Structures are given as structure tokens and as C-alpha cells.
Length: 412
Image (cartoon, rainbow, N blue to C red; front, side, top):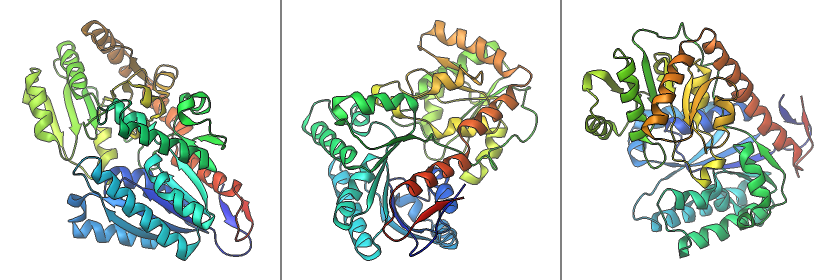
């Protein structure tokens, strides 16, 4: 299904992402979608690029050419990290100013913010130029800052962020969330202001034409894998501890970590837990190489700090693991993780992190990973839940459902 303009001017989309397009996440969760949504639409993309990525002129030019080929106008801004709070305020100001400037010139039909912060940047432009605001939340934004120990609960910053969050949600014409578990909270929790806009659930999807089964699952040695950063939310020590216990049960087991910027830190933490360097491999890889790296894994991990705000989270890596036919270790209290992994028989979900619970999970995980048919079952669940095409179709239906001042949108 796709949506198109049947008469009049092409509908415009002003899309803001706080993730950079030169990062793997931006490429998989923004560019991959927008390329497919671009035909028949005028898309202007504002992103915040990390200085290290921006210095790579070849990658920068390749991305500009890729987006230009898709007909997407790219407006990259520099991401500011320091000092805390002030840097975020500065980024909000830059993003808001850029959005107003583009909206004044282009008069977009839809102002689409990929997280609450980006939706806040778009709110003035939407109000000034009568665009429809889409709040595409990627978690409970203000509460994530508290749960991640970034700001204190109930402090001035937290109260300001909650007020901004309520204003955005109550101003939105459409709310998109990643998980079914988050919908009742958005509707009933007074902290979100009881928004009245329609709510759609679109989980983080993967390009399953790329993230696909590439051969029989590796059995000997058994390879436990992890892809991505290990910052605020991912429980590195617990994942390393799980591997250590698995290694006791399977001395041939190896740990494969795909990570770009924290390799020495990971090695240090592994050493502190008694994991020998010979038992692990840490590699850096571009996003285009991720399917090949995941295909080397017998099983994979995505342990995330369980917190109230994580009810609304859906990690991209789980979709990519399952798409490649790789069962996953997760933990309860994170979005729909438990119902997907345990309910569909494609992984194991920890409900606690004690040694006893970990060892029991190791046994269950090894048994699951060794079962015939689990690889195809993972793939089938990914196709049902996390297909990029399904995600694109969901976004296209939302764009088509909102009135367009420039002409009539039809679906096909």
C-alpha cells in the first residue's frame, strides 16, 4: 500500500530526528523509512549529526547523494553534548529555528518529530503554519531522563520537561508509540495530560530484505552476540555475566560484540568479570555490514535497564536479530519484549538478574537455540512484527488519514 496525491500540490513532510543520519540507527530507522515514503511527497529532513561522524567527508557526501537521489532535502545540524541541559536547550533552539524557517518557505502538511524532543521543536512551526503535528515518541521522554539518572525526579528540569511533554501530546494530531504496553499509560496517566489524538503502535522495524537468514545457525563454537552501544540503558555487566555463566556450561562459547566507540571500556569490564580475551571478539562495523555480523551469532542479547519509561521502548536490535533468524535474550519490563520473546518462542526473558535466575536462563537459552526450526520461527515473527514494509505502510496510512490542504490523498 502507498499513499499518493491525486490532485494539486504534493504534500510536504517536515521530519526532525535527533539521531544523525550518519549513525547506523539513523540509517536503519529514518533513512530506510523516508526513502520508501518519499515518492509523491516533498520531504525535508532535519537531523543532528555527531561531530565525529560529520568529520568523515566521504560518508557525509555519500549520505547527501543517497538522500538527494530519493528526493529528500537534508538539513543537517550539529549535535551538542556539553554542557548538560544547556546543550539540549541550544539544540532545541537550533532545531526550532530551522523548522520555522523551512515551514515558512515550504508550508508542510505534516510536521513529524521522531521523539518527544523533536516534536517539541516542531510545535511552533506547526502552530504558526498550520501543519499537522505527529508526535512519534520513542519512549516516555521526560521519565527516561530520570530513569537514566540524567536529572533528578521532581526537580525543576523534570517538571519543565513533563510540562513540555504534556503540551506536545495534547497539541498532537497523531501520536505514534512503539509498544502496545504504552498505550494505556498514555491515555490514563495524568502525567501525560490525557491526550485525545489517535494513537498508533508502530514498533521499530528492520529492513528484512537485508537482515535475513544467511545460512545454518552456527553451532560449534556457540557464539553469543551483542550489537550496539553500551551506554545509559544497556546492562553491559549483566550481559557479560550471562556470557560468563554460559561459558561455564559451554567452554567452546565465544562472545561477539559489534560496537564502534566503547571497545576498550567493554574489554575492561569483561576482564573485571574474569572473561578471558581469547573468549571474546569486539569488532566495529558499518550498518551495511550488520547482517553479516549477526549471521555469525548462535544467539544474541538485548538486556535493558527495566524502568517505568522503558514500557514505551522497543529496541531496534531485537528486530534485526530475529530477522536474521537469531533467538534473543531480553528482560521483562521493557515494552512488549516478554510477550514477543517468550510468547512466540523466539527468546528467553529474564525477570531478575540474580545468579540463580541467570543460570536457569542460560539452560533455557541453550536449549532454545539448539531446537530445530527456531531459526525460521525467529524469521517468521520478525516478518509479522517488524517488517520495514509494514512500518512504511503504517506511516503512509497515517499521512493519508490527516487532511491535506494541498489536495486529496488516496491509497493504493
